[in-house]
Image 1: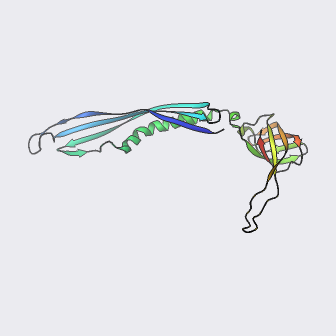
Image 2: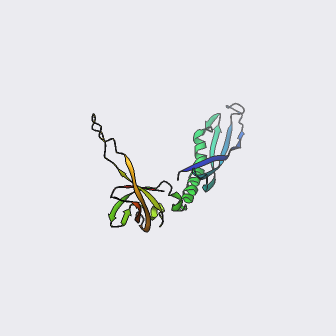
Image 3: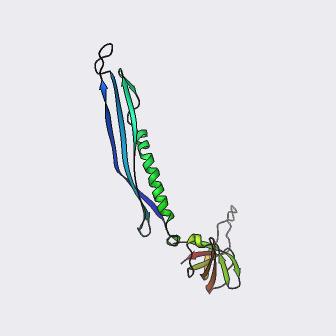
Length: 204
């Protein structure tokens, strides 16, 4: 399973409130005392989607706001004008809340739905019992079947001595008969032979 988060900003606004008291004297008209309160608000939404099935696994929504003040005295500006840094502050709380919602939804996903493409290895072979390094943490269930492949002769580059790997070949199939732990299951041979420690297993 491959997951992707798709999100959007459904609302973003800026509201200004304030006023100015002009002074007459050594300051020019309109350059008196004033203040302004800027409130930024936003709303975000996101979905956690399984890219294989297009199934929506979790949904999150969040709103947040942040206030900024600005003053003016005799023409001098006290504060800052609206900029991208302020926008980030408005979004920050909503993003954090949204991330928590999505993470919470992901935590409730049944591990068995995330098994597609599972790959593990044979950890031990004892008679007709084959122990593999996948278990309940991977959503393994009794009856699951795996293709077993063995790595052939390793090929070494004659010029550099680099390990080029080897050719994998399918040697059989196994079936899970017991889930023994978070990272351990017991399987039986279904077809093939010659199973050995280190053989790769891939869920069918």
